[in-house]
Image (cartoon, rainbow over all chains, first blue to last red; front, side, top):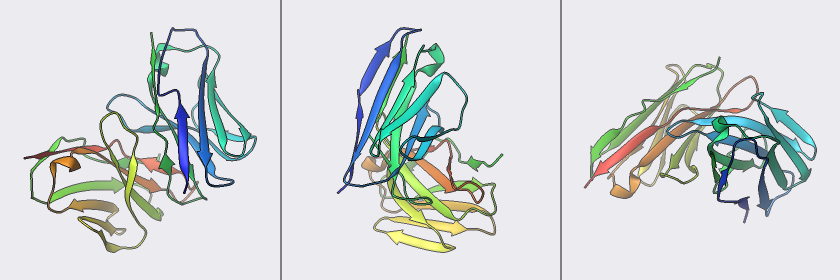
Amino acid sequence: SQTIHQWPATLVQPVGSPLSLECTVEGTSNPNLYWYRQAAGRGLQLLFYSIGIGQISSEVPQNLSASRPQDRQFILSSKKLLLSDSGFYLCAWEPGQQETQYFGPGTRLLVL
Amino acid sequence: QKEVEQNSGPLSVPEGAIASLNCTYSDRGSQSFFWYRQYSGKSPELIMFIYSNGDKEDGRFTAQLNKASQYVSLLIRDSQPSDSATYLCAVIGDSNYQLIWGAGTKLIIKP
């Protein structure tokens, strides 16, 4: 069966510090991968998605970037965090287009 | 801009009653529709998906799709306190095949 991991689970970072969040998927190959952000009490905002190694599409221009160095690894990064980057970051995978997305446990980020 | 609308709630339902959650969407060409449940502080988990007009039942859950009226609903029969959560509606648009998410409806089941 497939599983998706995210770490760290929680993170408190000062404004201006760098960020690296990691997501890995097990038990499948060539998944589509997604990064979402959810602000408190809000819906999901799609940040990035990837259909393959090195292939990243950005939905929202901001100070975040994503990379997919391996088939089942998706990384979200920032060089300098802003207060507005606080939120719940969710990684999701799907086996193919127009199919169901399955979410990892999420990373809760607080920027102070 | 393609949108998915949900009443934010909270929707309060007594235990054992039927909870009815609604979602409307703007893209008439949408083909796939999903309901996710999200407990506080947790990630969303899939409850059901529906592709065709009509009803789809899975245990205590029934998804209803009406493409002509552009709405999809989720019925929860015999509601339990453990059903208390935020329910997210998501729709795959016709143009770019990305999921478009509603903001969610908070459901509270009162014992």
